[in-house]
Length: 164
Image (cartoon, rainbow, N blue to C red; front, side, top):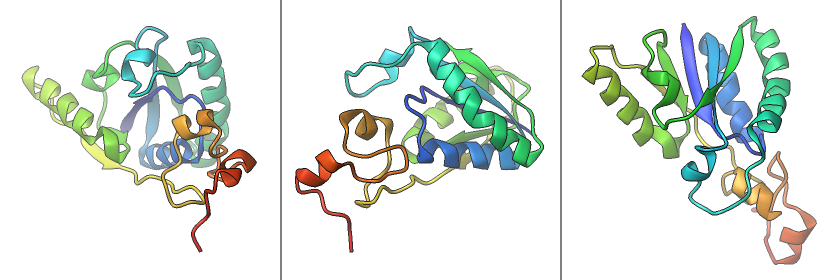
């Protein structure tokens, strides 16, 4: 099975790793990594996004051992439009997070328009941080949590309490 996955991945965190593991569990993976031009347009918040080359190198470092563990191939390609690589005929499945299901449905609409079969959409639940809220790159950049969802000392000083 050929699996597509897309995003900005800046910085990579345990939620992304869950997406990668699900995708690699299904088949060979092609990751569409947002280009420097597209990345700011996909952000709901205005924040700095590292250049494509740095994000791509970090992503490669994350995917290589996971792909080896699953005996799968992977590639990283530039993603310069929101529907991206998933509209290509070679894919069978698309792995997404809960907030990107609508985008996956738009991909399938675009595929149907050009006579392609819809992709199998695999939704991977969010990975919760220590406070029960989803791990996200935005929260990491804000200094609330680390890449594994641990609360940072700064967040703990603001009164954030882990559940328990």
